[in-house]
Amino acid sequence: MIATRPAFASGFDLSGKVALVTGGNGGIGFAIAAALASAGASIVVAGRNADKNRKAEAALQAAGAAAKALHADVTQEADCRSLARQAIDSFGSIDILVNNAGTNIRKQPEDYSLEEWRMLIDVNLTSAFLASMAVFPHMKARGGRIINIGSMTSLFGTSFSAPYGASKGGVVQFTKALASAWAKHRITVNAILPGWIETDLTIRGREATPHLHDQVIARTPAGRWGKPEDLGTAALFLAGPGADFVTGIALPVDGGYSAQG
Image 1 (cartoon, rainbow, N blue to C red):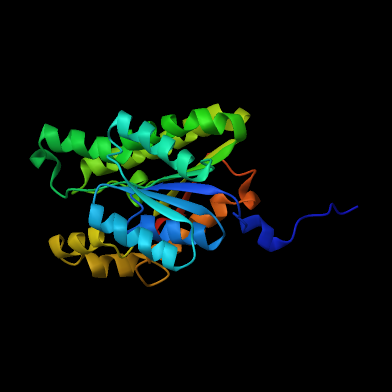
Image 2: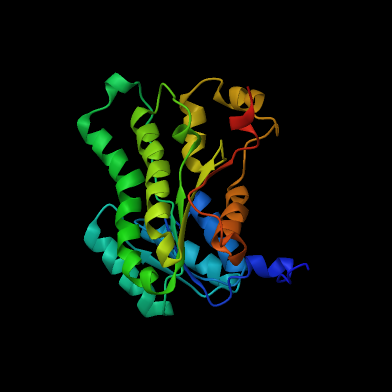
């Protein structure tokens, strides 16, 4: 006998859910926030840039979402705990956490200062730890979804992004550890590994690295750079009820870049 399953669309329904997206005021983070909102989730975006926060909040609300932008430095434990409290006070819960905050500095390994190394590790990796710990007491009681944003440098080495690659490799291992530890609490933890996506960060990378654009196109079977919206749909799947049995994965969204020999 074939078991009855819910309609396909219900696997992506986030009605009544609340999503907290760090670094959600622009680029990939905003695209993920918009995708989750389109499925019915209430959205809290967190960022340090007040102007970008205001614009993100207004854009989400104009599209019909219940949305709020909050100022936070997610490298600080107190800020992450305050962020979680404010999100719960505003919308009643946190069902989905997207650890998206990140940055990069491109140099040869020997040219980084210790200060730069520590900053990149803190923004890209420590922030995911702090935000996850901040939401855990709430999710422990009700279940939830955590989605961490890694990178192709989680898999491959690059000569010009040693600390970034180290931080993003750490994101994948952190994802697997949390998935193993928190499955008993009905918390799924997954990572998305963006390929070469058109964002402000990668535009600067193309400006700094000759021939990068052509090299990416040549390596990518899809024949194009990705768009932030490509990440939004991937996050929507992992956040939804259709991914209830998916945890501990690192999902490349890269147009085939990581599959190309």
